[in-house]
Image (cartoon, rainbow, N blue to C red; front, side, top):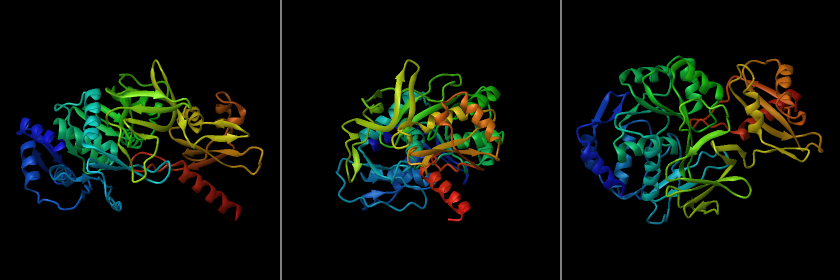
Length: 423
């Protein structure tokens, strides 16, 4: 199915430039890419594992499709998972980010993968006239769905940047105009700080982590460029997209459901997604949250007239003397403090058994005026939800998917505190 759609796409756009790799300077038309894919040796292995940031990733994907093998994209340095006795209909495996626990394998049919591409292309109006710039990983669910599949199934040209660093992106933007650029908040921040962003961008996407309202507003003010928030998940592909053309004023808003995607909330206020793009199962151990065209996320939220609003994640809630508190609520309040761009909030066990947990706020920047931060929060939040501990750092160090692990930062904070106490 996927390979047949690719061949039709390649034939229809045979003479059009399909792929450019800026690190090597090479480029391929759709016809040339099809010819090279056909010439690859047949594989006898049950799975192929595309890796890296080059045309080889695309060609290995096409080889897997051509030979009807299961495709499992991998980050450089990631060990290949054991994929034995997969059902014959499973032709794609994703690895989850692992920010909510151990990484898991998610199994897809060809039809499910194709449905995700259709939903994204139709919703975002991706087109051959607006090439995709690959600054995020091709192996991530985000990169694969927004960069690889639109190229191979819909003829959206792809340009692979040498790296996501500001100088590389600056050189890439000089090559062409009318770009579509999927990225993560950390990259948009780095590019904005380095004055890389140009007016040659048609569509700017941000996913993987919450996009700070202040950054969204500043980029729009300086470049008249709207950063469109995009919500997706490895288990179900694209979920929601901010279709508006002006900056958001509510950080909890992630957008409205993609075309052909239905989003509801469950009785316990969890976000639930139904679409033809939802994966078949976790592999090798199924879970009730995923399957039969339905995925129950680990995100709490609600649906209002303005769209889908997230309010926290399962397991992240902080217990303060029996009262449950979402760390995202504190983060959103902190980010309204002047010039504060990044922060992270989590709970740690309290020395006072009656309080259950104490709140830690990790702030990016030099040690600041903690009384002023407290006073700022007192105007927005109840007194019991004000952080007790303040931890100033140079960076939150998001991973390549733009995600930041509360678990990792909790461990780092406790380790630092124990060293300071001499324990």
